[in-house]
Length: 457
Image 1 (spheres, rainbow, N blue to C red):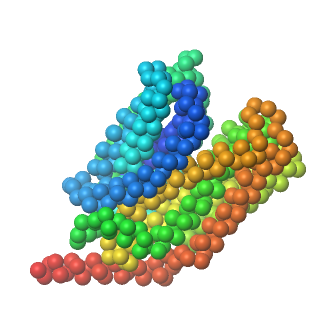
Image 2 (image 1 turned 180 degrees about the vertical axis):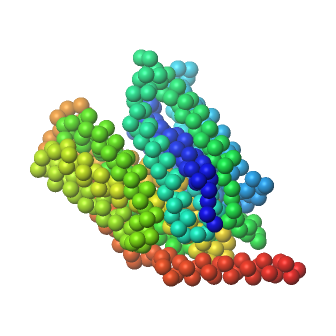
Image 3 (image 1 turned 135 degrees about the vertical axis):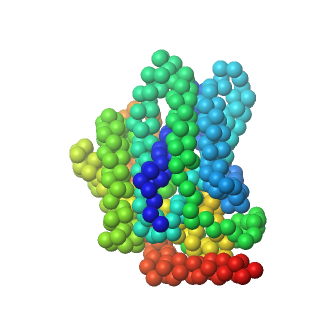
């Protein structure tokens, strides 16, 4: 079934506000906690990482709740709206400086509680948002297009915060960055709510399949662990995301100390964003010309080419043009991977219905939410440990050994991880071509048989 222009772009706008929020927290919360609140960076890193273990439990449970929901608004939109409203409020409290009215351990307690609550309420909204894609249509070409639109808006939302965040914090704070963070948080929360309202009131859930029984907690684990294709996707995406976040985590240090041109980072980020948007826009046509499998291979190999190019370019010269070209190359691959992953998860929903006999969009897409959170926290932990191992000293000229160590962690390790991701995909992923068509045909037959039995009764 074809989707209207209004539905497609109303859905995409929701990703803009959602990723404004995520990028604001992912990029600036540690700096806010350490520089404005005054708590230990070791504590913050530990908080970010440990909270992911709770997400491993919380995210699939939220998926179960969504999948068992049945209202006249559908099963996704009610939770999308509820989660957005709660998360917007928590976001504002997250960027209130507790050191202004608390002291000692209570500051740490406040920050910990606010961050964990933010993560939980973000889950309430994020899981139903991405889970809606399979509910729009079962047509493969339409899914390819629908997977691209929210990714484009998400990229624009995230890059807006990353590019202009510090400037807006300074402007809104008028000399007081703590207030600047709070005011920017309020502004982002408002945009977040408006963008979600546009999505909720302009999209419809069409391809809904109700399970014959409610999904139990035991059923959640059955859906996750009996779906071998989902496990392949989870493994490959975790590897891929850790590789990307290692590069992103070291990028500012790289430009400041290895290239000795910190201002180039903003240009590099801007060109990377343009590359991602362009790649997302051509993704559906590229898939139709080449195939999903070939595009995913490109998604893994282009970053390897980009990372190794940046390694050699930075070792032989400091050419900003060549570095930016290499950055564009690896970001093309990143964009192809983002779109491919969304499509693969949609197919994993169909495969789960085929393999297990239960359809669960939200439990399966809860893995995407968890993977991104986990990869961000884990790579952040590795960056922190890595800086210590290579003897990084802030705000001074780094030794040659430190620069070499930085490049190894930033380029060599991610390249190896990308190749491992590609190997995992080629060896175990099979939801392509004839087999994927067989899965879709088989579940359609099963649905028709159930409908015929129901009508007969």
